[in-house]
Image (cartoon, rainbow over all chains, first blue to last red):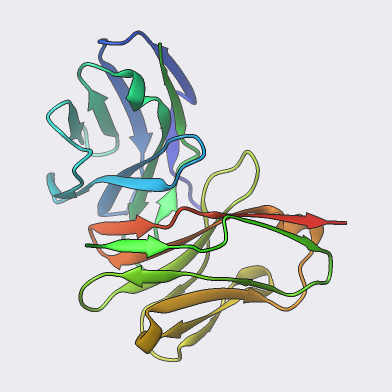
Length: 114
Length: 111
């Protein structure tokens, strides 16, 4: 089965630093998502992206966050100035093609903000 | 407000016991419903989904779920669990562009 890949698997950063989390969605998919899961808590929706623009975003996705699809294959999440509370597992997902509503998730990037 | 509630946070069962995990949601309009599973150390995987039609849907590994529209519920069931079903289970509700996940239920199956 095709996979969504995410890099890096672990990212450690200092508070206030910028981080970029990278994802390669499944090649023929059209919809892209970022979710996050703080340890012990639920999976939270951050943002969805379609046709090169944000389709919907949650209240978590404030001005510190941005997403980009720079080259037609990668899908990135940038956090401009990280906070301690940004520490979480960040999941990228994509959907599209046949059965477009099914989300395919990547294995996640564990972000630790110190 | 849009929300998904999973009432059981931790469930411990012996092998061969029956399983039912509850999921209730609040989300305006027509929605799609999903159950995802996350095995230890792995990413989220789709167990089953409901879009329309027969409200009883069957998924992988012997799981099934029933959509009861009047109760806004989508409960997951399995007649006989196995040790390998130990995982965290998430109910998700939504439409294209946005899906909301429940808080998850950690299932531990004792051999």
